[in-house]
Image (spheres, rainbow, N blue to C red):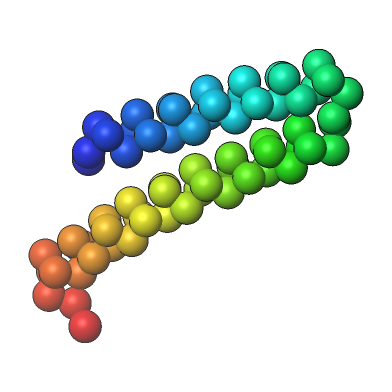
Length: 65
């Protein structure tokens, strides 16, 4: 597993947390929720790409398909 992917996910989490807190302090609850959901989707896409890579490696290792 590549450590840079974990650092990217952690960075997204930190950025989203800061953005959400700033938006909530300014009374923008709706935008804070949208920002949190966008961060969740972005992190999920990174994890899914890592999972696809894992499944491709398993497929090649065991000569499936």
